[in-house]
Length: 125
Image 1 (cartoon, rainbow, N blue to C red):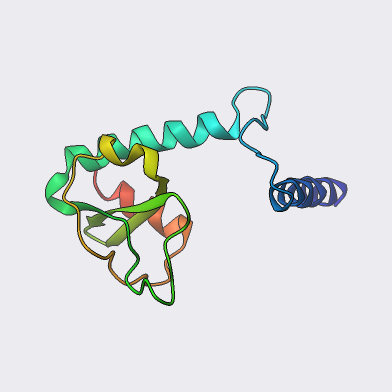
Image 2 (image 1 turned 180 degrees about the vertical axis):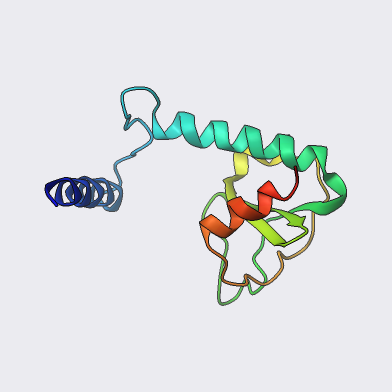
Protein backbone atom coordinates (compact mmCIF):
# COMPACT_ATOMS: atom_id res chain seq x y z
CA UNK A 1 0.00 0.00 0.00
CA UNK A 2 2.83 2.40 0.84
CA UNK A 3 4.41 1.69 -2.55
CA UNK A 4 1.14 2.57 -4.32
CA UNK A 5 0.95 5.88 -2.45
CA UNK A 6 4.54 6.73 -3.36
CA UNK A 7 3.99 5.89 -7.03
CA UNK A 8 0.82 7.97 -7.05
CA UNK A 9 2.70 10.93 -5.54
CA UNK A 10 5.49 10.64 -8.12
CA UNK A 11 2.93 10.60 -10.94
CA UNK A 12 1.16 13.66 -9.49
CA UNK A 13 4.52 15.45 -9.21
CA UNK A 14 5.37 14.68 -12.84
CA UNK A 15 1.96 15.92 -13.98
CA UNK A 16 2.40 19.07 -11.89
CA UNK A 17 5.73 19.79 -13.57
CA UNK A 18 4.16 19.38 -17.01
CA UNK A 19 1.27 21.67 -16.07
CA UNK A 20 3.81 24.32 -15.03
CA UNK A 21 5.48 24.05 -18.45
CA UNK A 22 8.54 22.25 -17.13
CA UNK A 23 9.87 19.57 -19.45
CA UNK A 24 9.81 16.05 -18.06
CA UNK A 25 11.95 14.59 -20.86
CA UNK A 26 15.05 14.35 -18.63
CA UNK A 27 13.34 12.44 -15.82
CA UNK A 28 15.10 9.10 -15.49
CA UNK A 29 14.67 5.72 -13.87
CA UNK A 30 18.44 5.65 -13.40
CA UNK A 31 19.00 3.97 -16.75
CA UNK A 32 17.03 5.92 -19.37
CA UNK A 33 15.24 9.24 -19.55
CA UNK A 34 11.66 9.62 -20.82
CA UNK A 35 13.10 11.26 -23.92
CA UNK A 36 15.41 8.30 -24.64
CA UNK A 37 12.61 5.78 -24.18
CA UNK A 38 10.17 7.68 -26.41
CA UNK A 39 12.83 8.02 -29.10
CA UNK A 40 13.60 4.30 -28.93
CA UNK A 41 9.87 3.52 -29.20
CA UNK A 42 9.65 5.81 -32.23
CA UNK A 43 12.59 4.17 -34.01
CA UNK A 44 11.33 0.65 -33.28
CA UNK A 45 7.84 1.56 -34.49
CA UNK A 46 9.29 3.08 -37.67
CA UNK A 47 11.05 -0.23 -38.38
CA UNK A 48 7.79 -2.15 -37.96
CA UNK A 49 5.84 0.26 -40.17
CA UNK A 50 8.54 0.67 -42.82
CA UNK A 51 8.82 -3.13 -43.05
CA UNK A 52 5.06 -3.26 -43.62
CA UNK A 53 4.29 -0.17 -45.75
CA UNK A 54 1.32 -1.83 -47.47
CA UNK A 55 -0.60 -1.94 -44.16
CA UNK A 56 0.83 1.22 -42.55
CA UNK A 57 -0.11 4.89 -42.84
CA UNK A 58 0.54 8.29 -41.29
CA UNK A 59 -1.59 11.40 -40.96
CA UNK A 60 -1.34 14.90 -39.56
CA UNK A 61 -5.07 14.96 -38.82
CA UNK A 62 -7.44 12.92 -36.72
CA UNK A 63 -10.66 11.57 -38.22
CA UNK A 64 -12.67 14.52 -36.86
CA UNK A 65 -10.18 17.38 -36.86
CA UNK A 66 -12.81 19.93 -35.87
CA UNK A 67 -13.88 18.20 -32.64
CA UNK A 68 -10.67 16.26 -32.03
CA UNK A 69 -7.67 18.31 -33.20
CA UNK A 70 -4.25 16.70 -33.45
CA UNK A 71 -1.96 17.11 -30.48
CA UNK A 72 0.45 20.02 -30.90
CA UNK A 73 3.54 19.17 -32.99
CA UNK A 74 2.43 15.55 -33.47
CA UNK A 75 1.13 13.18 -36.11
CA UNK A 76 -0.49 9.77 -35.88
CA UNK A 77 1.07 6.62 -37.27
CA UNK A 78 -0.96 3.48 -37.76
CA UNK A 79 -0.63 -0.10 -38.87
CA UNK A 80 -3.58 -2.28 -39.80
CA UNK A 81 -2.96 -5.61 -38.06
CA UNK A 82 -5.07 -8.76 -38.56
CA UNK A 83 -6.91 -7.96 -35.31
CA UNK A 84 -7.33 -4.20 -35.76
CA UNK A 85 -5.46 -0.92 -35.93
CA UNK A 86 -2.46 -0.10 -33.79
CA UNK A 87 -1.74 3.62 -33.58
CA UNK A 88 0.63 5.99 -31.83
CA UNK A 89 1.05 9.75 -31.65
CA UNK A 90 4.58 10.71 -32.63
CA UNK A 91 6.39 14.06 -32.60
CA UNK A 92 6.22 15.76 -36.01
CA UNK A 93 10.01 16.05 -36.13
CA UNK A 94 10.09 12.27 -36.79
CA UNK A 95 7.66 12.39 -39.76
CA UNK A 96 10.39 11.60 -42.30
CA UNK A 97 11.61 8.38 -40.67
CA UNK A 98 8.23 6.78 -41.42
CA UNK A 99 8.38 5.85 -45.10
CA UNK A 100 4.71 4.89 -45.40
CA UNK A 101 1.74 6.36 -47.28
CA UNK A 102 0.26 9.59 -45.96
CA UNK A 103 -3.52 9.74 -45.64
CA UNK A 104 -5.64 12.88 -45.25
CA UNK A 105 -7.32 11.84 -41.97
CA UNK A 106 -6.58 8.98 -39.58
CA UNK A 107 -9.37 6.41 -39.26
CA UNK A 108 -11.89 7.04 -36.51
CA UNK A 109 -10.54 5.96 -33.11
CA UNK A 110 -12.34 2.80 -31.99
CA UNK A 111 -11.56 3.09 -28.27
CA UNK A 112 -8.86 0.44 -28.04
CA UNK A 113 -6.40 0.44 -25.14
CA UNK A 114 -2.60 0.47 -25.00
CA UNK A 115 -2.69 -3.22 -24.05
CA UNK A 116 -4.81 -3.97 -27.12
CA UNK A 117 -2.31 -2.10 -29.34
CA UNK A 118 0.53 -4.30 -28.05
CA UNK A 119 -1.51 -7.48 -28.59
CA UNK A 120 -2.35 -6.32 -32.12
CA UNK A 121 1.30 -5.61 -32.94
CA UNK A 122 2.22 -9.09 -31.73
CA UNK A 123 -0.01 -10.59 -34.43
CA UNK A 124 2.51 -9.35 -37.01
CA UNK A 125 5.09 -11.95 -36.02
